[in-house]
Image 1 (cartoon, one colour):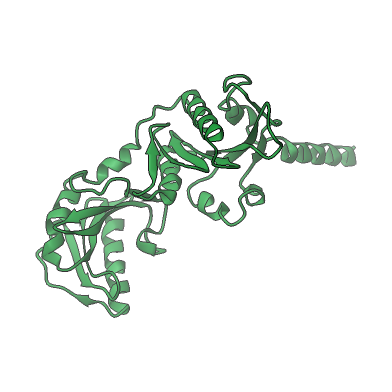
Image 2 (cartoon, one colour):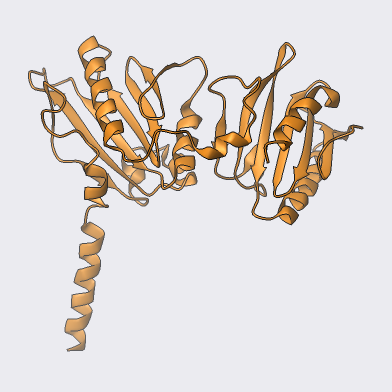
Amino acid sequence: MYSKRICFLASLFIAAVCLPVSAEGLDRLFPEPGLVPGWNAQGPPEHYAAETLYEIINGEAELYHAYGFREMAAITYIPEEGDGYTDITVYLYDMDTPENAFGVYSSYRYPDYDFDRIGTEAMVSDYGVKFYQGPYFVDLSFSDASEPIRLAGAEISRAIAEAISAPPDPPAILNLLPAENQVDKTARYAAKEMLNQSFLPSGLEARYRVGDREVTGFVILFDEPDQAAEALGKLGEFYLSSHASTVEADLPGEKGLAVETAYQGILIAAVKGRYLGGVRELNSAEEGIPLLKQILARF
């Protein structure tokens, strides 16, 4: 009796491991047959969980894991009158939150790319489309740059975006960065280790025009004010141990830091509540104080 129970539990475990990952949840977002004229799915979607994602995007899986990856479904579309070499592969990622989906999307984005209004925002090229909407990040890969495949790719992208129930509004967290003088398409969200520091949590950054130059403004997000103040102290210790020097500056906020770094110019930062705002790559502390005040005024 005991051995039968063990075998029964083991069979349940094996079945659970082999089941598709939330197949219905992601598969419903793919276009139905005939929705994009002349193109059909080559086969059913394939599904990937956290432990198997590397099998299909080896080398990039860590990026998605850093942003709260939950699951992914992939499907390939081929033309009805194809040559056997033309296809569009769609990778649909559930990133759990709109912030995480934007974070992955923003890690690929550069201002000089071409963009389209698909989902919340889309990057388009001759060989693919990347867009995000709600908690989903969608990546389409084209086998060639011909016009028919690019037009079909755009139609598939729009069909997926329309099937996503989440509104196409950007994540509200982006409002923590001032829009004035922000360089378009440069905002990024990091899920952890802001400023490449293991002791810092998630945050935002964007490029800003200051005079005839560009600098980086940032916001780091904490749960409690004490955590923000403690992190500012650790940040100062890190820079001073890395041959930075302190700079005299009349900074806004509850507690501030101004240092001249070895490779990133002058950095100024200040705490306000549970947030830590800052500006880096400055020629002088005074140059960045107006932007720092704008950042702190957002929270």
